[in-house]
Length: 441
Ligand code: NAD
Image 1 (cartoon, rainbow, N blue to C red):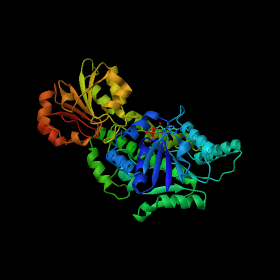
Image 2: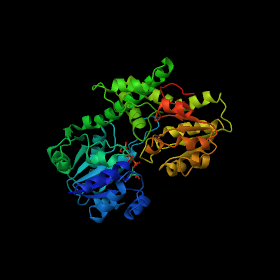
Image 3: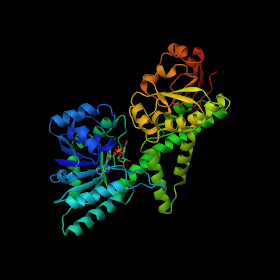
Image 4: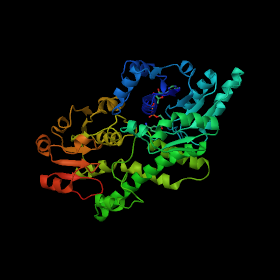
């Protein structure tokens, strides 16, 4: 089979490469000529564990191609996947301009039956808009070419994207014709053979499933963050509470870790977009408005603790930050809580030096030299008045505390991810603030 994937970002590049891994011939298309040129040289635009060798292997096997021409790539495609960005519009709704631009182009060049699949996260009704756009172009061309639309939202997680794609908890596919369902079944046959559930449904349900899933996950995070904040006030330890509730199989122990708020390119925008849809349809989802409010507050929790500790005066304080990306194992800085924290620290006159195993370059692209970047986690601590842990990269979990105390001016840690043991911090003599637990002094 042949497929085209339009948009070579986190989703498009991973999906395309993984489809190629199953034996399908894939052409990944992007408007960014630089990205395509680099990919053709084996240089990836993103950091994703395990992706680079897989891209190279599939290119060498002649199954994975990169191009800037949608026109050429769809000539022999059985399906074309739209995997371009859907950033938030000014009012919070999903901006569909890139999706519609691709649909227009497909309409201009389609020359025989194919299935047009939305893989981007798109609001309910988008497949209909894609269909109407393609039909409009076909009318302009005076052509009557059959095609189908389908919705196949992507659930991969950055940092674990390859495993998520190749061994998914489920694949969701919305179709409205037998023919489209047959093409999609064939594409996903290797997944079915390996007993990964492929769930077929109508298109609006598939579109809604993605938003409901991300909103549920965001709700779990905000719920746990607010419980953690209350734990601090009433003298409970959120780690104990988490273990206590997570052992109930109806609740489960995943995704109930408190922190500095959710970020990334998906949860914030998808929650906002679903709120917008609900308002437009006259059924505002109040619960999601609270999820968003709690999350925005949570991004300042660590900063508030620092301000309280230093009696509201951060002028001249040197603050080290470990972790910049919105979560470990990715270089993605979109909506990262670290950006909010850095902004607040700088506005209070603090000096910030940060270390992240892979996201420093991306952070520099966003905020330039407003902060300094350390080569390794220990260099960041030289003469630091405090350490802030914002992202829980593995290498931060068992650091050499003895070396750290020699480098820092004060043995002071603000941990936004609860990665250290309270007892150990007490033993080592650190002043240690975390989320939803007692302060160690
Ligand atoms: P991204 O910004 O990393 O990549 C989008 C790519 O599309 C860019 O390379 C851009 O140049 C390209 N593009 C834009 N317009 C184009 C056009 N007309 N023709 C060809 N290429 C074009 O985005 P992403 O993170 O991969 O997300 C893509 C979609 O998938 C979004 O809707 C997102 O919500 C959804 N999604 C993302 C994730 C994730 O973890 N990143 C997970 C699941 C779903």
